Length: 379
Image (cartoon, rainbow, N blue to C red):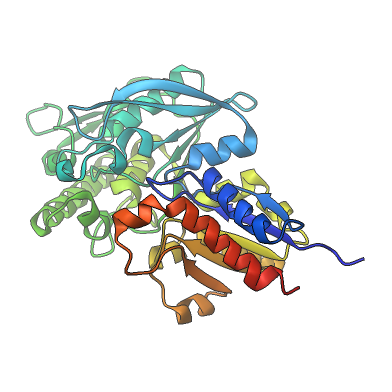
């Protein structure tokens, strides 16, 4: 008896449009419209950015604990929180919910003022809740403050030459003169789930690479990078910790670096943690295809994000991988070189963004139908 095809659908979220869970369901629906007997396994994915808490709660269960914190800009208040896993008393904080770029209107983006203070408040609330292990999902940030704001919220005194707290935001980094740890601080294990491998400073660093999308002008990028260099130097001389060249330290505007400096954090690839928690390798057993994707598939997607992790795992299982994204900005030759069977956009390249967003859900389902027609019905 011929085995029916098996497809694992492991989509990331389409930022601002649909969650990873919704994206997976739409791909399944499109496949089943054409090939109703195909076995489809849904495994929502995330890489440490937006949607990581939902992906891990889908995989493990858990409760959502809410808290009100300072938002990405100091004059904002947002409803954030953390995922709580009672079995091992672990709290997962998703920084995008407290300090994320999606929380700030585009015309108000200001990396000189944007702060991770609210993320630190979430971490402190989790500690007060009794967390014995912390996971911090970084990605999708509005900030470039080196994690200084989060450290301040956790009780660290980051002072200027006059022994006054430095102002919140990346604009205050160059004024740091003294770093004073909290008294009797307790630091449980902290893992930072990174979605990039960039160092803190330099041409591949946080300000240079990610600053423009956070509203930084060329002059701001120079100021922010100089501030991050100064922060790293102060950490090195006063705390004896090297954060400047550490791979991944530039994640979330240097929040990863700040957590290494002040919380002895371990930086790990976010996609690896989510894949492990979700049991993705087991779901791939005897699968014919894995379908992954996100809102925009570009070269960053091939370096530490969801699709790169999926492809690595699928290669070990000798499974074909297809990508369905809102927009594909990777050449076909590069896709083939990476071992992808295909990478399809859900809408033509010339489609205006506003129009594409309106029909994103229908277009995703239609592209999944195309996959089924092309690769499943011919079996």
